[in-house]
Amino acid sequence: MNLALLAPPGGGKGTQSEKIKMAYNIPHVSTGDIFRAIVKGNYKGNYPVQDILKYMNSGSLVPDDIVIGIVLERLNETDCENGYLLDGFPRTRVQADLFDKEAGRKALNKVILIEVNQDDLFKRLTGRRSCPKCGRIYNVYFTPSKREGYCDFDGEKLVIRSDDEPETVKKRLEVYEKETAPLIDYYKGKGILKMVNGNLSVEEVFKQIMEVLRS
Figure 1 (cartoon, rainbow, N blue to C red):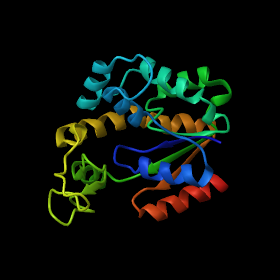
Figure 2: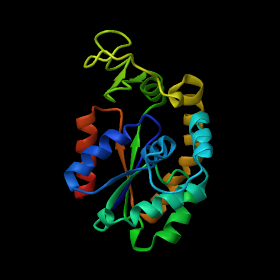
Figure 3: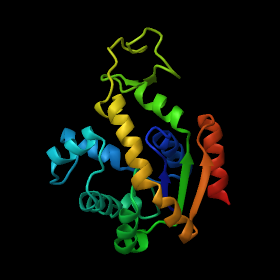
């Protein structure tokens, strides 16, 4: 199964991807995680670190040639032989078309879109806080820490990611609507797109996804 999970920023791709990964024993390939690892110097390969960091911090999309090269290189690793789950790619119609032309037998055969309303998305992103020590994630609106601003587990001061600042979030959502939404028509036309309601609980969303994958 070669699967891509599409959702707007804050749509729950990461959470659902990890659950699908465990259920189907396929690698979760997140372009966001890869970009962050590259910026920190924790990823093999020679990539334009400063350029990637600039795009991430501004809420803009990383250029197609950089993204597709990174994704194809990752999918050629041995753990992707029996399938994979893409999270955060493709982001545009152009990326999807280029990927289909270059992926060969690694091309996608299933795409799931998680739909979430805009108000929830804004709160999910601008309210997100993370612990720099243990990596736990909180949200000031939905899942706040017991002591405001500090991690429940190690007492570390919580931080907000630069791409979760309100102005950057607004830009990210605008970019998604403009660039990613056309993917819906593209994959509908290929007959491989299924949609699920992302406004529900994590478990309810996962149940929908499993029903789609089993159908």
